[in-house]
Image 1 (cartoon, rainbow, N blue to C red):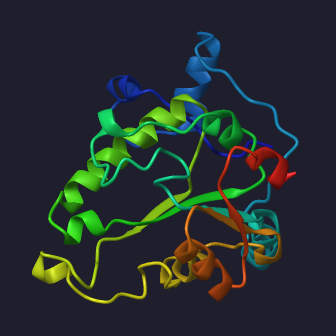
Image 2 (spheres, rainbow, N blue to C red):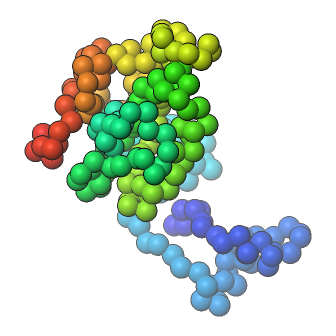
Length: 224
């Protein structure tokens, strides 16, 4: 059975005529003949959702298949050294052994939940945060590390920037960041936990009824 999932280089579009055409029977067939097509054999379950009666089966299957535990990471002081209001990539220094540690966590969803009061205090802007994490995403992918989402709170009650100066339940110890993720993802909370370096991280985890682990050099032993 063909799963119907293809990865094509953009230049293939230059070889397709502007008319009704069959990808499988005309384009892929020619590529096979020219030995320019590779396939991946898999033992994964494939169900045809073009058949209406299969849709409820697929929904149940996906919910069961995609359900797994998650690890929620505070960022500064856990993933990188906390050098106070880090927003430039050159200042983002990964903690010792964090890369091999993150690589081992294939069975978990990975999330970053971070307070970023530097935005409210006027040290940097939201766009600086996004630029940093865009670069981090690229570098982590090169290391075979994949975070499923990154949430942050830019607010602080004593902020200098008016629109960010407020109390916010997204800001830890508030747990609205975690609740938002739990609402959007199919997570096994009993096997999930949070890793942080402060009391506010611990309180956030407790409010969400998720196990908490303080970040230190013995993380590997603690996870085991």
